[in-house]
Length: 300
Image (cartoon, rainbow, N blue to C red; front, side, top):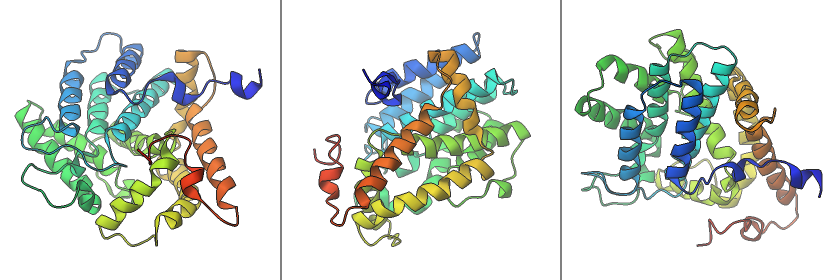
C-alpha cells in the first residue's frame, strides 16, 4: 500500500454529513480541553440552530442556500473546537466560558442567510451582503430570550464580525484581548472550514449563484469563479497568516492529542483541493462539470 493511501484523511475522521456526529466530536474535544465544563448552553444552541436550518424553528423557513448550508456551519464549528483545543494544549489562556461562547457564535455565524416565514421571494442568498448583520440581529433576539447577558451578546457580536470577509479585525473594539484572539479563530474557522471541505470545489457553482442573486457581479459565470478561486486562496492565505494571527498553527497540537499525528490535516485538505483545481484549469478545454464529479454534490 502506498504512503498516500496510508495517510489519514481529514474527510474520513468524522461524518460531516451528519450534524449529530459532528456535535459528538465537538463535545469530545471540549471535554479534552475543559473536563468539568457544563455543555448545557451549547447543547441548547446546537439544537436550535439545526432546527433553524431544517425549517423547524418558529418564524423561519428552512435554509435554501446550497453553499452556505448546515454542512458549512458544521465544518466551521468543528474547526473552531479543534483550534481552541490546540491552543489550550499550547498553553494559551482561554476561559471555558469564553470558549463555549465562541463555539456558540460559530454555530450562529451564518444564520443571517435564513429567511423568515413571510419572506417568500428568492432565497436567503439575496442577503449575502448583509448576512453578518442579520446573523447578529437574530443572535440579539435569541440571547435576550434565552438568558444570555448583554455582555455575552457584545462579545459574540464582535466574534461574528470577524467572519465578514471585508471586515478588518483592527477596526473592531473587542471587549478583551482574549475575545480578540477568539475572534481571529472564528474568522479562521469560517474560511478553513469551507476551503478544506471535501466538496468545496463541487460547491463553487452554488456560490456563484448565491453571488448572482445578491447582485454581486465580480464573476462572469461559474467557470470564472472556479478559475479565480486559485487567486482567492492566495489572498486568504495572507489573511489567515497576518490579520488572523496564524492561529492555524494550533492544529497539529490538536491532531497529535486526538489522533496521534503531528500534522495540519486542514492544510493538507486545502492543498489537495487547490492542486486538483490547478490541474484541471490548465487544460485548453475545461469541462468543469466532468472535473467536479468527484462526488454527487452538484449533480443530484
